[in-house]
Length: 213
Image 1 (cartoon, rainbow, N blue to C red):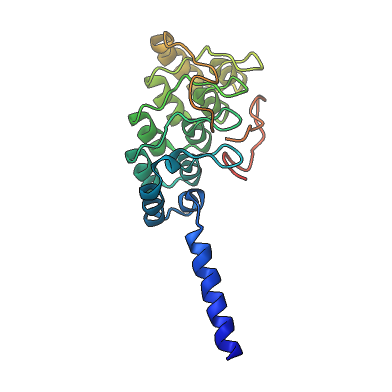
Image 2: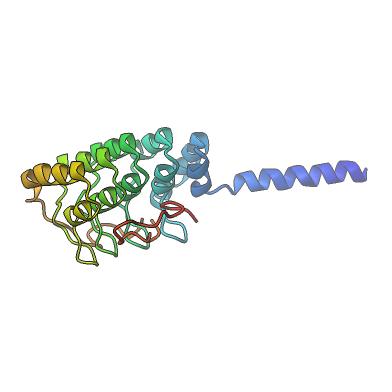
């Protein structure tokens, strides 16, 4: 009898835990069925923020989970949301070098001109980490190579400091065509996005990753 009661209590606890799964858990694990269930009950949950300000979309981007990203975008995720450090999902994709994901975010009107609290844009991050394809993609969508971060450096400045000829040529040639886009500072969009990374050095320190808790 005691064994039966123990098993029963264990089952109840397990079911209770499953029922309490948050949208962040579902996004983190890529559980589409759970996401659908949660959003069906609460449509606003799709843009909720956790303690760091990360939205479900940000967590999916950090994991490189394109399937979950597509589901969230199709169901109304705010692609330009910012976390408590001002970072966006596109900034995470730029930092993590997720080119395919960046393309999808841009297809849903992800902004290339939003700045985080360090006044860095997605292009700033892509250039600092020498993510060539991402930088080219952002420039093609109007990113401004002359936007300066809180250290007074632009994407072009970082490319020059790295003495990367390919990057310098890329940002110079493409940038001359797209520099008319006005940069929007933090606050232009809903306040949510990534933890601040140690991003403003000529050779940035590798951080555990955007959105990592």
